[in-house]
Image 1 (spheres, rainbow, N blue to C red):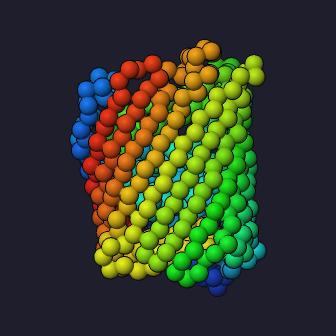
Image 2 (image 1 turned 135 degrees about the horizontal axis):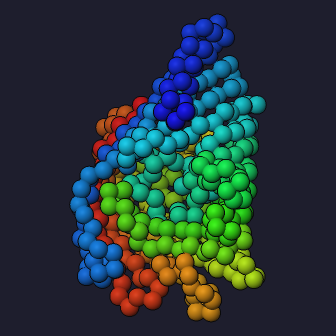
Length: 390
């Protein structure tokens, strides 16, 4: 049975359950989103030579449909499926039990907690694509997680299987796993101003490459979802495990918001060798037309997007450094030849027409210096997004 049939059966069964058990107060809400992007690019000769000429065009960043179900005050179920690129894939599919609004357990398939950027969906971030440094965020995994908080402390932690759990049985190779946690301290946070600082840690056991080895890999595309070629990549085929961390800051002052994260990673490899990488981003945004105060989200330790005819300006800077010079010069470089350092300068405008529709424009100037290459690749990307959410 494929995912389409499974989703249809799940929706039909849930609808029937709702009708048959109205007296038990099962409430169901259908959800959906569509993110349509258009992009144009310019490159220097080094980028054209090393990567080829990037193609202007349009694409669908995300298109999904799902539902949320509530039973009483404690039980919550969510199921989302994406139909991007004519493929069906699972997004958030989980069951949640709440002891109270500040204490709940979640089990299923959802985003692993790792830093501030994991608090937002793709439609709510200030960038149209993830900052390059957020490549360390592992995305969605199957796992179990506990969240507990009060006015000043927010803590989320859990254990997760690697991506192969969705597609490959364990007779094909051993699964890796991830143990992760995010701790946020909110010393000053009032209705219109305040800040939080946070720290996330993660231990990752490498996953099987189905050939008797194991690996930890990173690849980063240019900051666009239309032309998806890689800017640089790293594949450590002799990895044993990885410890990675991120420190975050988020500040709000009425209609201005600042956020930043610093990431670092240490990969232990066969023979006791190591490979270390790092990244960083900072962004500032503010509402310049019809300004209102940003609203802090105490459930996710993020902020909510405005939705009442606001025009928002964003400025940002980031870098990702996948080069460990000691490892590259003294060890076998198989899988490391694509490593490099990427930086970007970003600016954007977002018009929140209403709570369902937004128009967004992003510009990125990106530079990539790959290991072993004498010339720096330079790419400019201008992107427009029309997004609809309900």
